[in-house]
Length: 235
Image 1 (cartoon, helix red, strand yellow):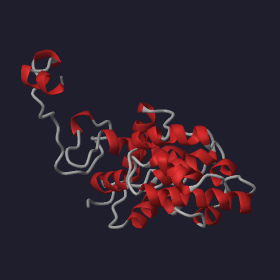
Image 2 (tube, helix red, strand yellow; image 1 turned 90 degrees about the vertical axis):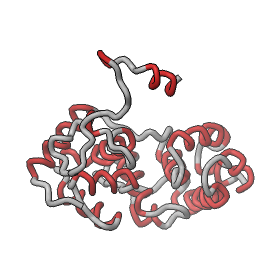
Image 3 (cartoon, one colour; image 1 turned 30 degrees about the vertical axis):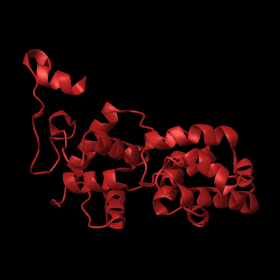
């Protein structure tokens, strides 16, 4: 963990992220709050790309809570068996759909407690739904955001809860809506776990990470042309 970041640095980081990506969005394909909720539940220990492949057929067969509630766990499982923990996820998806029908008329509730009462829905999932579907300034801390918050010094913390608390304290209100997306995308594509690509990081000037990789270790020839070795690797 690093030291405390100044408010000026925090402001500069989010101003730069906003300038780079003015309208950040989740990469989970969804049509409405229900399909978003299901996609987020399925995303645990799975990639967004994998979830999107699995939900394409699932949402075609069950586009809303009533249709999903009418499916068996086995039927849901046939669509999502490529995902980790798919049996438990199928069970949760059918159960949460039934509760949505029974308690909320088939609609996803705009209420944290009601969301977290659904099978398979924890604080992180509720935060995503509240942010994306209902426009709240919540921040769902996943492994990417946890890493970025600690590595940069933005909001250091030993637990997911502490990092979330720290981010909610330091992120300016005008950036709260997009903060979750900016940080997760930055962690996914730039501030990677094993090899952060600091040489192309737009917030490197304010990042407190002491071991920045300021140049690419990939063998690149003159004028950005890949060497024969690199070309063979990427072929």
